[in-house]
Length: 75
Image (cartoon, rainbow, N blue to C red):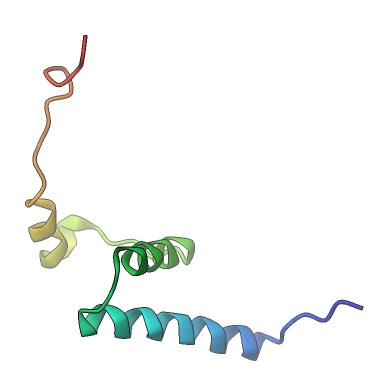
């Protein structure tokens, strides 16, 4: 017989994963995999941010180069 976890257990696991990711990122010890997992965790949970509504995201977005797709096309 297959037994499924209760909603309380699932919520506790979810909160624990979120807290672990937060702790690693805040401590400065997060690896590239940790950051990738945090991004996936947010995406999988429907969390998105609008760059134009968040000054930190706007600042980050301005750090990336802008490419002209036509000029960068390899022929």
